[in-house]
Each structure stands twice: as structure tokens, then as C-alpha cells.
Length: 130
Image (cartoon, rainbow, N blue to C red; front, top):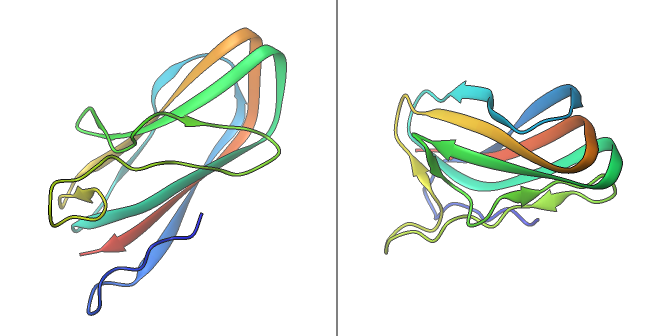
């Protein structure tokens, strides 16, 4: 996913990698939680798993702040291609979700299918401070 650039004079973007190591076999709320210092704009989110097994298996990730999703729809995680999320629509004046200082990002998974196992999910969260 091409990461949008902040407007001129805005903060530089950076990527925070979150490694969800091990076998993920069940829906898990708040699998990972990250506190951000300072106000941030979420530029994008990407994810990929190292491997998956099961019959008709699927894995979807959600990124929330205060119980409110930052994604337009849960991010479907695959093992062959990196999946890129669509961010929620924002009120006029904001081009991406803005997270207040001291906010906590929560990552949750929803697994479905027969005996689904997703191994070592890597999540890339693209942010700009300010």
C-alpha cells in the first residue's frame, strides 16, 4: 500500500512493526495493546501471516482505540500477500484517523473455519506524529 504523505510542514511518517508471534487459534480481543505518547495520525495498516492451516480458515484483525475501530472493515490476513486496510472515513479536515495523546491502540483477531491456525502474524502500523 502506498503510504500517504502528511501535508507540507507535517510530521514525518514512520512504521511500527508489531509481531504477534506463535500460533493463533481462536478469536482474541486485545491480543496486543500499545500506548502512544503524543498525538498521532494513522496513515495505514498492513498485515501478513507466516503460515496458516485449517479448513476454510480465515483471520481478520481489527485496530481500535477506546473500543472504536480505526478500520473501515476488519483486515483479512493472508499468507501469500500483504493485506492493506482501508481506514475509516473521517470528518472534514482529517485525511486519516487521528489518535489523541496517551491513547492505547488495541489489536484483536477474529478466526473462523475448522481448526484455524495462523502462525506469526506481522502487523505494520504506519503513523505520523502530530
